[in-house]
Length: 128
Image (tube, rainbow, N blue to C red):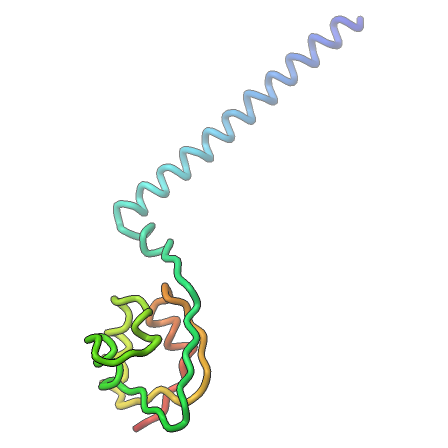
């Protein structure tokens, strides 16, 4: 009777192992297909941006507007904004131009890899 019990135990454990292998296989296939689709759309690159925090201090006497940031983008003016994603800085410049805004004095922390939309939520603006 003990021998039969052990055989049933081995059969059950084989079934459990088979089920676990199937579940792991399904999960791996799902991940591979999902990442493959993201790669084709270019989404994986966009979602995996990594950057350092940038500490921005705008003094009371300092004017950070579209003209100032355009100089930063051109490399003719030194600012922490020069370390921000090169694709996102022009979006901020355009936003400041279109709305005739300045960045309010204060201290801000943004990440190099953040999108314009996220940075726009952090920064405070005022009309010229």
